[in-house]
Length: 136
Image (cartoon, rainbow, N blue to C red):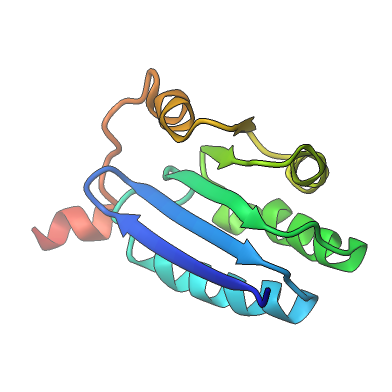
């Protein structure tokens, strides 16, 4: 199954919802990163203050070069979210994610509702970026 993804930005809640499916190559990871960066540009919260919910239940087990590409993507501090909740199905995919996301505040879940509850627990309302606040 070829790599596909969707990215939804909830600007009111400062949440990025991502779904990844299929088998990724390092080139797919780069293309995904471009789309993810465009999505982050739509956020109204301060940089690095958003939350991310990522559903990878339909991802295949990835080759090591792809895992390394995702690891590089996740370690880029310019686009860090405060928390990432991953929704996973297989234990092998979960192990790959743990390696890729080792430098992040991230947790793995099999239940989407539980992932969302963890993501939002104790979360204050995010301030708007100064430029966005001035434009209002």
